[in-house]
Image (cartoon, rainbow, N blue to C red; front, side):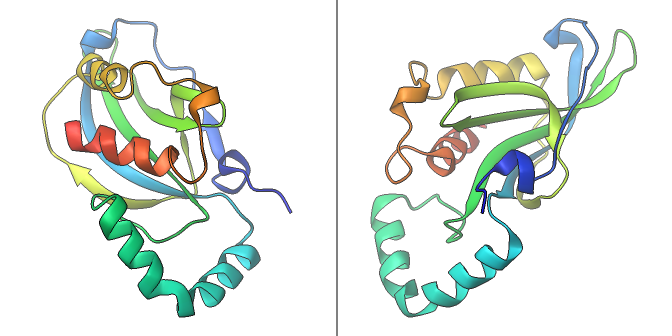
Length: 161
């Protein structure tokens, strides 16, 4: 069985306009959770995790109090909708960290849960600069599924927003 946010999260790439990021004003901004496993695997992992929930909860509180989920088969990312003031284009943009490294790309996951939202006014350029400042030297080789993963990256970036 595959474990892939792109597959189970139903990734949809978009082309987006070619105007500068400074002309793209965010209209919505979220911290999102994307499934990375088949629903049967997610259900089984939830049932199997019940006896361990107090241990997992305690370790999360000690390790990362900002991690908003106990779902170990979920990918976290930052997603926004922007409207370009130059050409009028409306589109999605996603920021994330995975085994492929840091990524910022035009598009969205269709199968998500929105965990948090922000009403902070900013441009895509502002958000992109926050992305650059979050783990500025991180590469794909830094990824560790337990200690330096998408959930840590997304919550660290969200804290800067």
